[in-house]
Each structure stands twice: as structure tokens, then as C-alpha cells.
Length: 318
Image (tube, rainbow, N blue to C red; front, side):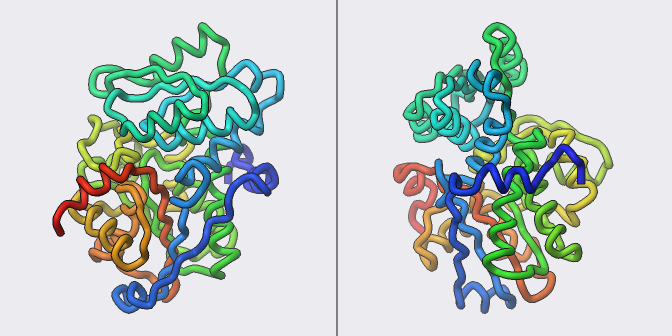
């Protein structure tokens, strides 16, 4: 493990701040999969996704004098909300670079936490360039959505809780965008059980991590077209790629249709509303894209930030 990624410090900073989300169980799901499935309900986390863990930890780790100058980030929604809320808790300004096509519900939530939003076209502009220009002008600190040691460390606490509440797991399945969640999860899981198989899941139209790991180098793709807006990343980060190379056994992919089926399953049989990115990992297990390894399987439901209107639109007549 990189000495920069301090899991213990993250655990201490987040104690009493993050919500200890429940682990959901279902006899029907166990029977369908042929193993015990433990669903970590991070869609019930503060700001509606696991992202609050990494955002708060990274902001909390900053020296007070630096933090007070303000925070900037770029995000399509969940990290945006997390940074905005964490900054609000510290009473410091937050600036968020968001794509024009980000879900309106996520933009509205981000603004409700007092953040300033700068819009951009994700298909013609680079969010990193916009953020770099603004932070230089305003002397802000960048908290990126995944490629940061303290963000990765914060995300690790999700899986640490899962192991504490469910016991040892043979396999952990995680949705993958830029790799922050799976990197932190893998580090936490392998600290508890070195033989736990870590599997990531991407939309099949956005398999940049899968291609990068197979090639042994970071590969950048065009912005993927997928309903999973939280996974429209174009490349893994340098920190996350290094961790995934060492700790991730496999990256599977699923179609948007299969993601919708997983959302439908969670709603019908678990009474849970989960956004597309949040259901991606379960989709792989339900479809067989990921085969159960062992008898005890962990799956992270990573987010639930979806408006009622969008949920109904996506579900449609089924």
C-alpha cells in the first residue's frame, strides 16, 4: 500500500461524520446467485452516495489555512454534491465544474449546499483545464473525484464497515468510474482478507479501466454514452490505476439494459431506489458477467441520486 493512502487516518476523520450504511440481505437474491450476497447500501449515505466519504476526508486533511481559501472540483454529480456538502460543513467556499448535461437533480442539490457551479460541455471541453485555470486565479485547492490519496482512503471506509458488519468475504464486486471506490475498497478488503477477489464493473460503452488493465498502461477513451452518468469517465487516474493493477482481479462490463434490470430488481424485491451507476455492480452478478467466487459475496450499491422523474422514465413499462 502506498504510504500516502492512510486508511487509519481516514477512519479517524470520518468517525461520527459519515453514516454507517446498512448491509442488505435477501433470501431470493442468495438463491438466485447461489451464494450469500451482502449489499452495502451506500445509496443511503449522506449526499446519496459513497462520494461523501472521500470528499470529507480529503477536505478534513487540509491545513486550516489552506482549506479556508476554498475548494474546487469537477464532477457530473455525486462528487460535486459531496464536496459541496463537506465544504459547507467546514464553512468554506466550494466551486464545482459540472457538465451541462449533468442530471438537473444533482445540479440542484449541489447548489443547495451553497456551491458555485461552472458549467462546461463535456464533449468539447476538458474539465481539468477549466478547473486548473479557476484555481490558479482564486488560489483554491483541487479535490479531484477519484485520483487523490485522501479521496481513495476515505472511500476505503465503506468496505471496512462492510467487513466489520458482515464478516470475511470471498469476493467484492464494485462499480468502477475513475477507480476511487474500488481502489479504497480493495485496500481495505485485502487488509482484512488477502484472498478476497476484487472485481470491478463498468458500462460496456465505457470500459477504459478494463482496457487499461489489460494493456498495462492508462488508456483514454471518448466520453462514453451510457445511462450511468457517474461512470462517464474517460480514463483511470495514476493513483487509482496503480492500486487496481496490484489488487483488482478482473473488470467486467454490463450493458445499459442490464443495469436497468438490476435497478428494477432492487426496486421490486428490496424496495430500494438506486441510480444506474449504483446498480452496475449488482447487474454483473445478476447477469452472470461476474461469477460468484466462494460463498460470501459483497456488492456495493454506490449511489442513489436519481430524480423520481428520471427513475420512472428509465424504468418505463417493464
